[in-house]
Image 1 (tube, helix red, strand yellow):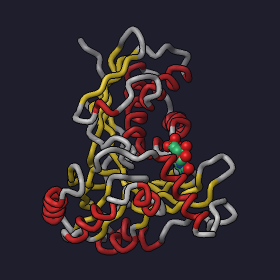
Image 2 (cartoon, rainbow, N blue to C red; image 1 turned 90 degrees about the vertical axis):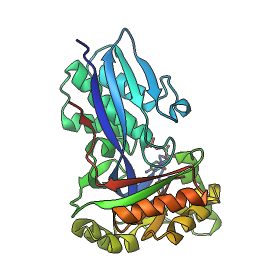
Image 3 (cartoon, helix red, strand yellow; image 1 turned 45 degrees about the vertical axis):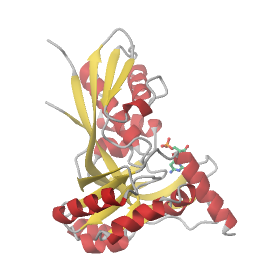
Length: 307
Ligand code: C5P
């Protein structure tokens, strides 16, 4: 009998990403409204002599397979927490864009935690798992929880949000990724060069938009479209000017709204319905302004052990 545990974990889009000033610890306070969407990575954990990591999928070659991988760090952290050796082979079946602003690395970390906790029978409480997630990265707790949630602090302090239905999206995946720290750094640089300053005292405290939360609650795509915002978008476009063309191509194709997903370079397009999403995806591909265009829906469930 093989005793492999497989966990499926969703990608995310930030429907609001309000970025406050740079804190003394280098992070930025956020009002971060996360929506999990139906692009998934799977993380499988199998007993092994020592920690080993493999990956499959078209972009598997782009992720590190050593101890720096967030999934490996998650397995090490959980093992250390319980005084165990991380004797596990982790396999990541990668479908979430790599370094794409959709929390793919965070998804793998949350998936590895849940898969190892199940395989090892360590029965870590939900609160402890969430604390381990937060140590691994700002977006990791949300990958575990999924659905829709407001993230405060650096994004790790979550309040689940009600949603009134499913939203239809298209994700335009770019050639190559963007570094999250580089995009935050560019956001600071743009603020400094605009003369407003980039510190906590210079930038208004980030607040969630009532209109956006209401649109999520009622499932109203048109209102959500008018309320989407991402304070990192200008920085991502500054580092990757061609994203402006991608955003424009999806808007011209009939999307209700377009924005950069998180720190990018993936661009997210909200569509009226599934049919419109399929047509926006087709036009985006034909526009040659992206590598691929993927329809998806949200909210999607968080990390789940597959039967
Ligand atoms: O938490 P995580 O490891 O994902 O963060 C990666 C980098 O992104 C941080 O080192 C920091 O430069 C930037 N970041 C930030 N403010 C946040 C989240 C991330 O400045 N709230």
